[in-house]
Image (cartoon, rainbow, N blue to C red):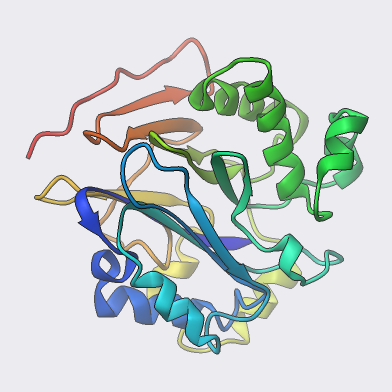
Length: 275
């Protein structure tokens, strides 16, 4: 389980600017629980492939984390990892994962892991660098991209398939490529295990919103047109909830956004942000 944050700005910005000091302090506080690694991916200009930096160290004690939050760019995403029990804490398992021109980060646990592993081709499994269910999730999307689908199309197809195979799992994810940010909010029936809740209860000082709905994803449209996305604890309580069981795409060029429901019979129209 993890914490996610992302932004798309009309011009150059940085994660620390969009978070503000209060948001940064929330992230560092959350890193005491989500301390099994951190990652950052960013796009300098529209059309550039994302750059990725990540570590298996806790963001709470790694000075490079603060440095990466300050890197300027058109868009970026941040990840704090709380490793699923049994999966090792090492750099290859830290998020975001990047292959080619796409970066991917996930908040959730797909169990049993053998079920998602069986969905992948031997060739795809051989190309993986780690052993997490999250990287397998990304690998399924990569297979669809290789078949010619766009990133939003590939993501939506895979999320619908995984929702059928893992009806109670959180599929929350953020993807970033040269042209767009794609946000998956698919966790309507997800909840933390009792052991995880006990672990959370042992840590004082976590952001107040963190425990309200652990798997909720929220977003905010700033007056200058910047789009912010975050997990609870990172996103403030006054941010708007992203549509449940949905995939939302935000263009890096103009922040035009479009949401598709996992239920194909109830699509939502795309919208142009006004500011």
